[in-house]
Image (cartoon, rainbow, N blue to C red):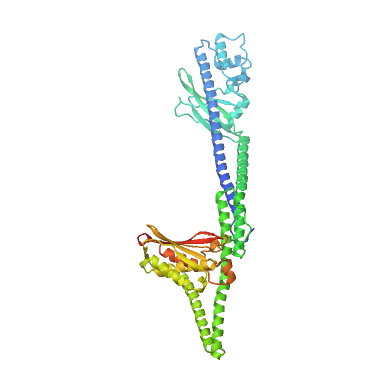
Length: 518
């Protein structure tokens, strides 16, 4: 676990915990919302289904009851239906055959034909389930046939409130009735007598809400799905955040000065973006380490470059002043002091020029330049230097004179720097080739020196980079190629390394023609 340094990030939550718990919360909210809606829908659908069954059963019972009344009306007997209930022995306690469902009794042999007709009508009525309660109301809204109800049915009816009277007596009515003991569903269907609505036939049954096991199953399933989803996201997020955590730890180590922290193996990471991030971070760490080494070398180099001439100048001037050396020796000491002072001035000017060039402040004086003549001047200038005593510099003929518009001093500074680098690489042959294209002018500087090591190639254009050989000699500030590239870019061109090997090196200077430099 890496430590947080700033107060603002101290309350931050690890990425793995933050996203997995947030995902689990969102998933659980969504799934439980779906679960509650499903429970509501199941409950409503079950109630509707029970209402439909009860409605069909009520219509059947009401139709049968209407047939009973019709049988009574068509009978020529004077026997009343109440007498029939007394005549048919056993029906008094089973009169709820139309109400509670037991089977109808046998018809006595002594019954009259009219009584037999009415009794048959009673016997053909469907059986009413034992948990159903039948209430028959006449057109006046008063319950009748009470003498046909047993004590149990009467006690149950007493718990139920009076049914709501239908506004339209020809239509069915549904009710949900709540009592102390249970919730009831009640359906009322009109029954007929003398081809007219005589009243309403009500059948009530307890609401079947025995769906607790279903609800528990739904909730448990939702909980299991949420847990499995969280586990899957946790495992996947862990593989994603693990390299990020290692990179965060590596970043802290870099900020502490360790430029070689342990990093994840980018080749084993399947995610392309994370692999690229690790690879880029590794390159960045190496680059920062290289820049740190370059900064250290620069301080040591600048200190040496400034201290050596200052010490030499001071000693020589002191010797001349004290009269230790006189005559021609004194003149030689003064000349050496002048040369050292010029070298100090050159280094200071390079630093100042580089600072202004990095800020984009490069003054370009445009004038027509004859490239062949300029190259001849540069060759003559370097051949007079002691470092080029064993170096042969040749310019390949270009045929016709090439004219380019730009700053001649900048071109000379770039080429002199390239030639100086070739001489420093122990080259004995340097060849300059010019190629004039429609859009740009290119000048190649090829030598047969020892070349540049492969490890140094990526850094040769970095500011203050002087290479291993130059660092050992403590010579220069490592700004030559950097300044050369900045000057070339000011003219719409560039300085590039074309090739390098132990057999030689080729640098190319490109300069855009004025009509394309914009």
